[in-house]
Image 1 (tube, rainbow, N blue to C red):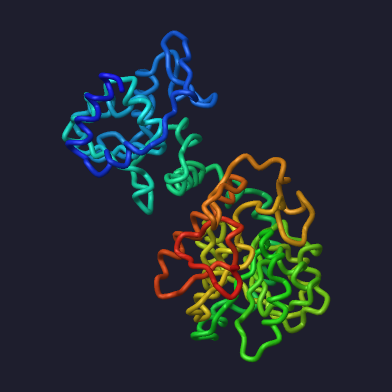
Image 2 (tube, rainbow, N blue to C red):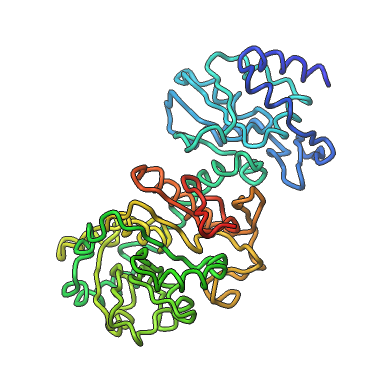
Length: 430
């Protein structure tokens, strides 16, 4: 090891002995690192520069300037080459700086190459692994390079950071002033006014077990078992998301309730034939033509979105939780109906088995498998490909589960993303 590492290690071992012991087990990364020259220099890991190669300090000052001025506590995710912590510690208002490691091997490499004592030894600094915390802290700055290079242990926090950073962008299509939004709400106003309040379903199934069925590829493993369970008396309640409805019916499985929220859901997803005894729970952005054709009872609710603010003043309806995906209100409905045990089917948030969805062709419900550029850890601790918004949906479901400790949540498959807060239902998981 270098002199730099010895000096850095002495500080870390003295201040954070348990972290140092863990850090010492990190694999070497020298072979993957490359020195990149510009007006200055930086390190590149797998083609991703840790910092600017021209002016690292100026870059760090720009990053620091994006934080709320006068912050007494700041969280930095990713260690980089130590530039951002150094700049932040110049601030007179800063009382505590938490530095969260996103890739332990990269941090070890930095410790071997550069003297980091100027910030490691500052009493205001707390050093920790990001993955040791269940949730992100604010205010924060996350180093872009290490959001891409986060290791497996810190991946869950990486996903939460990305979800938070992209929140405004993801909500752009739900502008209450959008002509498309305004028109859709006007078109659905009549149905919203006359259809039943979703609150009428609340507390109607106290203590009943509920299966919430989504459309991930792992659902295909369970069609036969679900069909058999559907014939049992008594049995769990089946709540299906809209895109799972058609493949369920094709396999002889009739859900008890269908939930739909997306304005792009059409007749190919929700064919109205033979739906007379199936309630449909929806949000007002749903296609009114599809709603009107549904033969069963209809129940309408809102989300907390400002999109429904004006409509809420005219027509009072209960609220369901929405975090970007239809699975969120489906799960929330199950909880509000009184479920104490919920098993998730097809809740993969990923593309296991080289498929995007159960019962649909590649690309039918979104980007094709070939466009997947991201990953999550599956139930076996292995990486499985996914897309960025799926990781955000996963984060929001995990937050919801954490907020409802009175309910037991189970996952029916290890093939999809590992969902924090769930255990595996041994009736379905081999």
